[in-house]
Length: 129
Image (cartoon, rainbow, N blue to C red; front, side, top):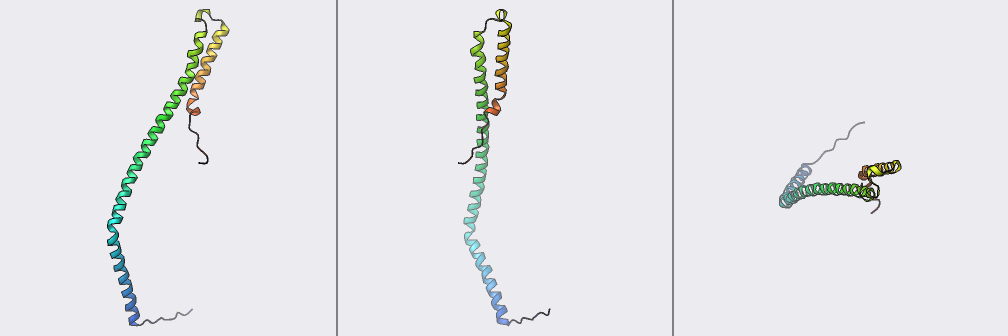
């Protein structure tokens, strides 16, 4: 397919060059006028990013501490069953085999419940808002 040659006059080429030059100069003037604002915004954004990073780390630390406290509280609560019910059993020499079995079962149940404290106290994801 043959191509058609486009002929431009000198004034058209000069006009296009002048328009491009003026647009680059205008862009340079605009960037220089807004440089301080842009630079200030960049610095503020960097400071906020660092601050947010520290706050996120602190929130994660607090979340870990709260979860550890929940697990500890759960284990303490279940451990209280031993403290409450064990005094009702007679001394070891006077216990019947059934009482020994019941005490072992109580302690085993408490240990099993305490072992599940981490899963039981885990924070469930919220749905909705």
